[in-house]
Length: 108
Image (cartoon, rainbow, N blue to C red):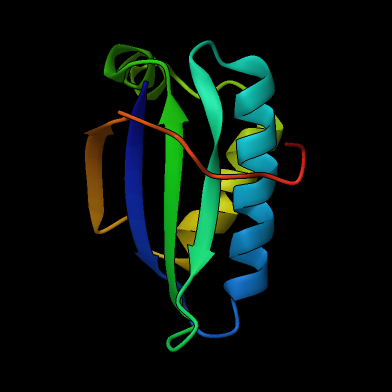
């Protein structure tokens, strides 16, 4: 399992639209894309335009296959456009191998 970390600065006033688009994209990817295990979105409490997402994938190859494929889903394209309008591309895109997972979720 790998984690991919993204960081965005969102235009002031676009925070809710960005978060809603991220939410919709993440749910769709988790349901439809092989190797995608969802993502966590965080917002800086002291600087509310700063967002970090931590995505979970089975492998870097699965992530790469998704990113190399054309985006054919109209709803995903619309949500992606919302995210691009609200923020530039992520400043960072870092890959980490997951060694251990001890967090508790609401479903646990």
